Image 1 (tube, rainbow over the protein chains, first blue to last red):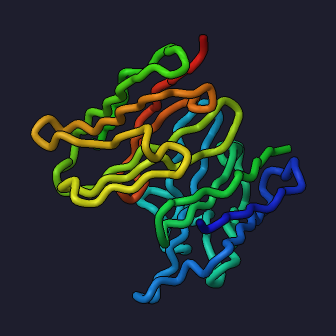
Image 2 (cartoon, each protein chain N blue to C red):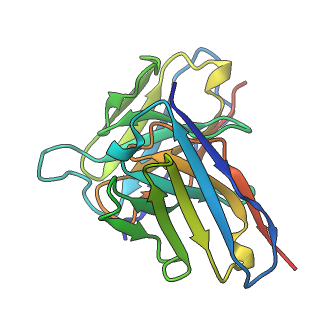
Length: 112
Length: 114
């Protein structure tokens, strides 16, 4: 199984600053079509997860351009620019390169 | 508007069974694969199972393989998760989600306890 490992944020993050969340996979998530099969989600307190980006860097419909995904085959970063109150919650990376689909353990973002 | 509404959760004793449902609306359900994901209290997300649009391809997490069965009824726009031999570690909020994980339900709680 592909293991997903997420980093820790130095919380709290001052409002208006940027924050970068890291994720590492135990195997390359690049498929033979050249796409990188990595999703990022935000789960706000008491809510269902919300897809932010897919294929590592493509923003989901309606997601602010303050969220940007980047990375290589095994190391990924979600950058949040100009952090706002509604960005608080737990961020998860997930690989959809193969089954079983696996999630990272989550990274909590708190705002100052 | 896409909606996924789970139901069927509750309190169940260890070793017993429970069947969850997820009613889909707002999209052509029969064209898309679906997923079940769970979240134990205070913990992270765990993918549970996936099913293709025609039920031809089905996948399970090792933690539920042999005990849980994912299925669907395209005529009823409904996804199911039959859970048997339930254990305390199956206690979680169970979400159904679209194939691409771009739509999620609100979740349904399953508590396994004597």
